[in-house]
Image 1 (cartoon, rainbow, N blue to C red):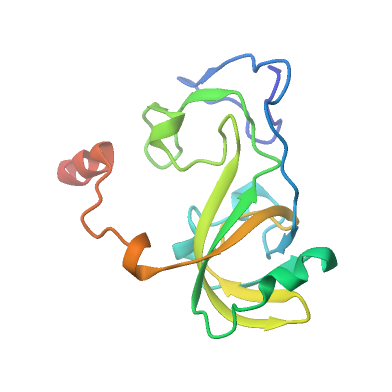
Image 2: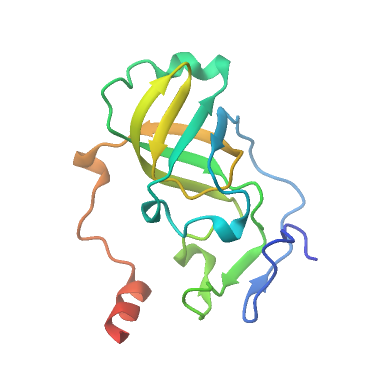
Length: 171
């Protein structure tokens, strides 16, 4: 198996994997863990909008003071590290589309830096744990960062992904 590959992902016909550089350029501090009902990849929703599951975001004690000021916030961006995804795929064949696409044209967790983000609805904050709806990751996924969602700057209703628009036209 190629460096950076994850055994549970496997490589589909038409996908392209590369050898990764020998060392990373930077490091991150995980600030907590995400708790979800999904223990394996097949059970995860394709994206956070597909599930109404209430998930927990456990913030490590040292970082809990950074939650100050989130009271009354309705939505957040969560950035997390898909630690069980392969990192060496540059062309992927999504199971729902069946046609190869470059990794940077997809929202797949398989990418050189498997950083994911989800806009989530914040339900509650209790003792350093956030209750949220809108996640699509495996239980125990490391949390990188939390940012408030600002509808005034984070929403682009006119946004288009070219290949996705073409696919919708073909239906």
